[in-house]
Amino acid sequence: MSSATMVSVSNSNTTYLPQQVHLSFNHLQSSDVDPTCVYWPDENGPGVWSGRGCTLVISNSTHTNVLLQPSQHIRSAEGNPSGTGKRAAVVDDVALLKDQGARVTRCANGFTQPNSNPEFMNCIDIDECVENQHFCGERGICVNQLGSYLCKCPTGFINYGNRQTQCAELNCDQYETQPGQTLPGFDSFLSMLKKKCLVLNSSTLPGPTRLLPTGDVLLTLLVNTTDVVQLGLQSNGHRSSSEVTKLLRTIEISFRLIAPLLTENVTRIETNHTEVEIMVRRDKTPPKGPVSLTNENTQLDTTWETVVGDYQNYLGFAYVVLLSYRNLDSLKDNTSHQSQQLMSSAATVSVSNSNTTYLPQQVNLTFHHLQSSDVDPTCVYWSDENGPGVWSGRGCTLVISNSTHTVCSCNHLSTFALLKGIHHGQGSGQLSLVMWVGVFVALTCVFLSLITTLWCRFVSRKRRGGHRLQQDVQLHRK
Image (cartoon, rainbow, N blue to C red; front, side, top):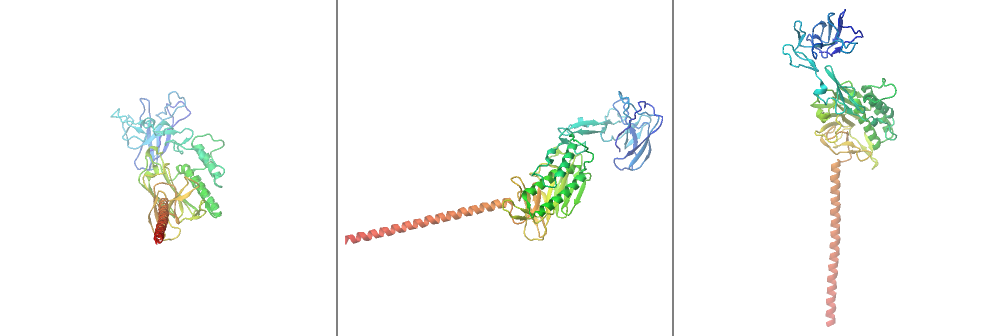
């Protein structure tokens, strides 16, 4: 019912305490069940939880005060003159048995019953590092602790401050600012992200690190910086494809570091130009079931299975992000130099699953039209695989649409929107094929017509030539 606590003092002579020792425990969960104070004696074996000499003073649903009797001792560790202290905790479902200590009918988390003594059931520590060698991942080092464990990550790997999750590789070089590759305004922000990344992956960072911002502060800075960048792009009249690609890539890599550091399960931030909602789950097992995120202009419907991806790579947390931009309603096509008008706000979807190029389950996005229109829009995403970036309809289909809303279904994740004035990538390919077939048929008809005309002329001349020859022969005979 509480965290285990170790009491240690500089006095090496703790075999007998002249005064009582008071401990106050905060319950891990609110409970009206009266707990029992226990400590961890290991004089006669590997160790068991015992209630001997530990008295409950007062308890409520959230806290318990206990008293260690002066006749009991805080045991010194063998070979350690300073003493390691008595290990005390509060365990529920405990009944005292005469002078034999405590009979525990349910072991606390991190402990188990060895079944060696049926009359006196005791609890021994579980070595999680032996029970499951994959707790910390392939590169993490598992360290067993009393009732728990922790993961130590080598340089280049982090567990985002949660030392009981797998160590994941995170390349801090991706937050390096590069001339011509970083949008103005993001330089200082990316520099801050890199410092935070280096601290988390245990790399040596010169200078003080105490003032580095938390995940919540970093998210606020990201949204504010995105606002400034959107206004800067808007002031240029049109947003070029390369500039939009830089913005979207920066936001994507930023979420990979920020989202796992957020303290709340659901975080929402709304400004005049950007709206973001992030949902984070921190479960020991991968979460399952539907998940939905909504803002003023867009709604995302997917599942936690899609968010997590491969369960073997689950890091002890999962997050999903929905971010809408209110000032990317028009883009300049660098190839045709024509503006592409959006019918909705653009929205970025980001999840903890790193493999989102092809999803086994479709994700649905419901867009609110910027203006009521009876024209069927095209569901598109921002594709930058083969150039500076372009809106593409590949992998996205329109489910249903009316004058105010449109539902799109896509088999991958990216930045999505509704576009008018173009066709799906697949439809464009079909149209192009039909056009070339039509041209081929037309040219064939022209060629056949020309051949037919020439043949007719040849036959006509031949007939006329034969008729004249016959006339000449008749005249010669006369």
